[in-house]
Amino acid sequence: IARHGLQNVESSDFGAIVAAACLAHDIGNPPFGHAGEDAIREWFRSSGLLERHTLTVAQRTDFEHYEGNAQGFRIVTRLQSPANPGLQLTAAVLATFTKYPRPSQVDAELDGKSGKKFGYFQHDAESFRRVAAATGLVERISGQAWRRHPLATLVEVADDTCYLIVDLEDAARLGFVPYKDAELLLADLAGDSVSGGRIGRLHDPKERLEYLRAKAIGRLLESAAAVFLANEEAILDGRFDDELLDNSPVAIPLQAVLRVAKEAIYVARPALEIETAGFEVLGGLLSLFVTAVEAGAGHGRLTTRERMLLKLLPAQFLGHDGQPDPDPYVRLLQVADFVAGMTDRYALEEHRRLFDATPQLR
Image (cartoon, rainbow, N blue to C red; front, side, top):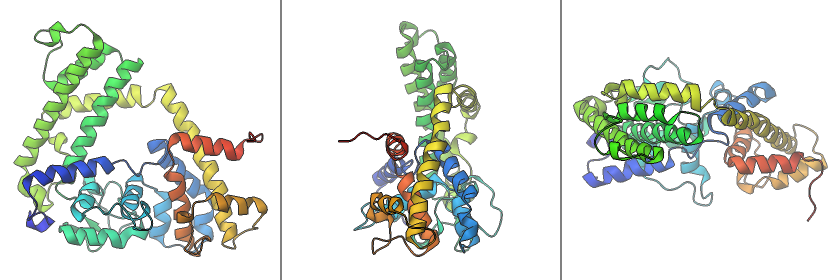
């Protein structure tokens, strides 16, 4: 406990730390979620800009493998409230928030869950190093990669518990998954039956799912707590680099829910249509604003249109003098900040406003 800077933390505060990290968990997701991440990656890979400018390998990798988790760390430590950067969260919350405590490019191959993706951009590397030092994270590669904070394992459980189970319930209501199938899946997770007892007295499909969902969540939490306590020493020492629920009795029924999600929910036609549109929307917005900032930085013709686009770019996404940053890495990252910070609806509306040939006059 002392190693991770928690020796003076009341036991009741552990829950507050995890809750704060959970609230910030998806804050870095761009419009259209994971499809939005793919859209940003693909746009930068095909833009030619990464070859045109002198960037380090690590800087290029930030764009080529653009990651919402790293964008989230950037928001809570730098972008929110620019005058007093970040949300002023404690080091414990920031470490707990970071599921992948490593940069996009490292000097050696990393195994385990914490090495699967990356959690901060090169621009924010020093900020994360301070967090790692303050919380005593176990180093994997000196100054580059660390093991997860012990409490980060609980954030991962919360993510799997809430999103996967609620997605299944929503899918049943929308007709993507038959109610009976959803019932059986949730009953397996809950360790319960779909007949007899209290559920036998419930006849409305919606109420039956709500009951099973609550019981399933309760069992998942109990299972995660049991695995955490059984592996507490290894977790604190950084020797446990796996998901808690993967090592519990609910692992098999949870994988069954995940399979249904991949086969029937996340590939449902409405979801695919929205995500496919995201490539057009985000690619179009990046193209417009990157062209403008590149021209403003002297790498292209600064037309009247580009001047107008620069005025549409909020000041926090430009250099200190209100002009595009002279550093190409920072300049491109700031445009990604702007686009990634949009909601789905705002991105769609902004794309429509900028690309519609017949805008409405007010």
